[in-house]
Length: 395
Ligand SMILES: Nc1ncnc2c1ncn2[C@@H]1O[C@H](COP(=O)(O)OP(=O)(O)OP(=O)(O)O)[C@@H](O)[C@H]1O
Ligand SMILES: [Mg+2]
Image 1: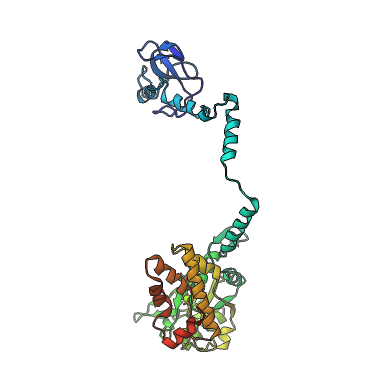
Image 2: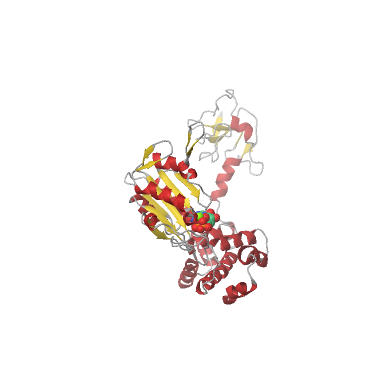
């Protein structure tokens, strides 16, 4: 005979099939411990709601798999599953209150133990923490089709550059070294959803690297620029003001007309072809910090919308923290590097203190280098003593 023991279904289910709609019972026809609750003896078994023996798929008809897994708890002669259930609803013993009042008593005990919280104090703490947090721009590009692209940790100018490109403009980004121009170019292409190509110009870059060339056997060798021009894409000319004038003339020709002569044939410009250039100068020739830069032909410059890219301090901070350095140390580095940067600008020094200096210092400190060693590697870098003293006068 099966004598139902549990009032509620078991908590953790049958170990073999996971069925939770089961109850513990005693099978009096098989020997087992005496249960005082039920005043009967029998082997512990699991039964279903209908009161019949639970059989897992694959078990033979006389055995419940769960019974083999779960012996009755020796301490209380209650199966472990049932015991867990009871433990949950056991009143808190230290309260010595009637069972019905136990929960209220428990609540009042918790309330008396809880630390007293001053609302104004908490508000002030939150405010001071919030003042410390600088969140870099997150650029969201929403297409007419409703598709959204989110570029986290982007430069504050990414949205402007992307807007210019979407409006059909070519863009020249001008700013000091390391402010994130090349990264913006790549992210702008990603935002728009068209391929990205890039080439870094130097005085040695040949026109053939832009437009491709014919091999001796008469076969045309394509270039990345040809891909973008013919099939669409953002083509980025990095270090634009470092290119040879003959190359800049080729670039100018590609932007001037709807067609361009490549070595093998005339090619029609794809409507999704966009040109992004980045430079450290506005194309008016070398300056004190960026010597050897080319003056860019006015007609070429005229084809670009110009965006000035400065240091985005929120992004700089985020990049520093991403090195894994302790926050306090990162803030110390940022404070130090920014003072040097400000001093270099105000004193019209030729030295460039870019975010590469702050991020690099953080990386070196996180790797265990000393402060002095990190400064030496990322800021001092063999600078003459006179300049160095001038630069750190503000620190
Ligand atoms: N939004 C960003 N997310 C992650 N890293 C960035 C981001 N912007 C810039 N960086 C990092 O900062 C460094 C400088 O960025 P980038 O090369 O884009 O600057 P740049 O203005 O093109 O410099 P240069 O004038 O020297 O060519 C790189 O190491 C780059 O990976
Ligand atoms: Mg660059």
